Image 1 (spheres, rainbow, N blue to C red):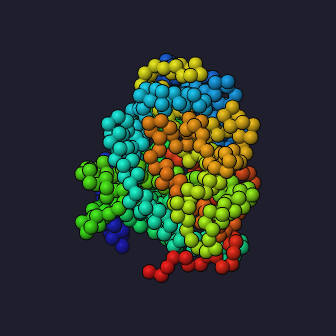
Image 2: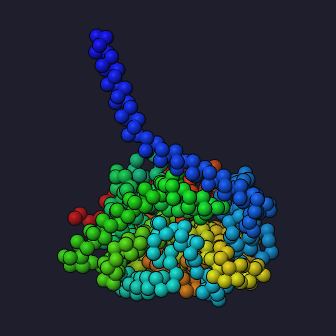
Length: 529
């Protein structure tokens, strides 16, 4: 027994030694990476203290941003920015630690988007922040690359065939999935809550996949988890947005170089996005070989053979068509829950325009165009809760803004649509109120200047998917409001907290209780087969 124990001990010792030897390179690599990161950070911070570069600032605004002391009074960073912008006559402030000039001044927005468009591209710094995620997609490029994608997408989105195809997709998703899902929720116990934000993200994801790629992920089947693509997309969006909020971009660049922390998470998420985008392209090619398709990706494939470029286009479509639509619809039903008179006005208009007794009919695009009050309510919602709360450009050359602010070459300039919706100087003393009537003239919707309401941007870069998105959102609003009462619950305050990301997302979702308005409405609205 003694000899056996000694032999076993010797064997274990040898094995442990072998294991330690095999692990030495990995341990050494981890130690070296950690030491290098710590040393680089120490040198960087020490250098900053000694040299005090121009953007290092101890003013009240920058100190408040760096210490996050604004969070003691405001739920969201955007609300703090709106507070700052209201307090200055020119509606423009400089957050020096970010190298960012923020504005809520309509003449300045017009200056950026129209008068001096060439001086305010997206810029290399912005492109670098989002390059890993968006690549060369339309939202992350300037010049010829942007113009090529815009012309191609604009031509396709304007075609009657694409518009008819999109309308049919939306009607099918509403009739066969969204309405039955809400009906099922309304039929369950009164205590059961539904996360409406999650539902609308699934709805928009299904719609954009069908319209853009000709593929059906079936996300509105709540028994199924959200697809891996959607989860990875959310993570990549959130982590990319955090890069932009960092006071020193060298920190995230160093983390990316060492593949640690959030940058490692981002790389993993983007790897999954890449793999699944490649599968989307492969499947689309396979389907196209048997007869082509009406979706947008099939049409882009006729002009582009580069799969990496097509991947970037797939991701851009997803960002534009899923996140923004879901964000606007979520905010709309939050507001509607607090304003039942608006819901009643929508129902009155739907009855007047459709002149139909059958509540199962999904409104056609032609009918939707005649629903001016629905249009105003949607626009009023996006005034208060724009899906993209702000947008940044980088000055190509020195400039002076209309309010007198000097902008040095390379400075980030951001127009803040969320703050603009809360400016008395722009919208009057009732700017904080949800009042759709402000958009009506003689019973008809009348748009405002895009530089006063830059929700869809303005000038040369105005959103080309605007009409399709409005059609989809109005169709969903009409279908849901006709059939259900939606009650938002579980919020002591109607000031939602936003999660980080490239679009406005409510942290914690939107828990609601769904009630049917008519007993004979609901159930299976999709014809068998």
